[in-house]
Length: 253
Image 1 (cartoon, one colour):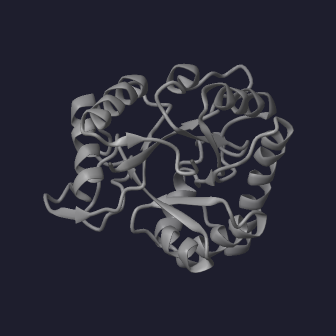
Image 2 (cartoon, helix red, strand yellow):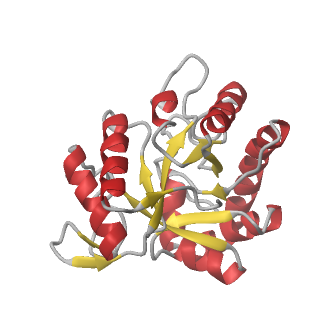
């Protein structure tokens, strides 16, 4: 039986501002990427989200982003490789402290938003992030866009890597995600998203905005927790995966 991890971005509220459907989504996912305070999250949110993961048997991952809370970490910034290393270490350390305090372990690291997309194509940034993850704990799994420079950098460093595909995003012909600023970047229908996921997991293939087929090695599937249909997507996708005899479980099991 084939297996797949189902991950979701979590802990993205801040102070009085509430975002996402964390408690409801936890019942349907196997791994959570917890915001570490730069693009979203705060100490109370981080602690609460770690506890939610433990209560629901969900594996915990760090979700470091660019220092841009106003833009939710989705605006590209010019940073050096050294800065990428430093902000990655800093944010993993913040989450690691709460995970350790709860007697748990960290499973993975997945960069967020613009940092993720930049590292997917920029070798210097991807190498810096992989170096940061390796130095903190070489047993951590590095999540990156399937086929990207980030996945390659993690492999070169000797990390276990997970090729990530997206349930709710469309792709370009080169395998990168369609930018959110472009039309049709997001999928809004749960059945369409589920069909896309099944195709990527079972066949390693997906169509794109240019109407060609691209090869993708899927180890983990992402659902964005801040999407308006996130819960509906999670329920539908998990059911379809199980109907297709694909076991849904965290990578470190």
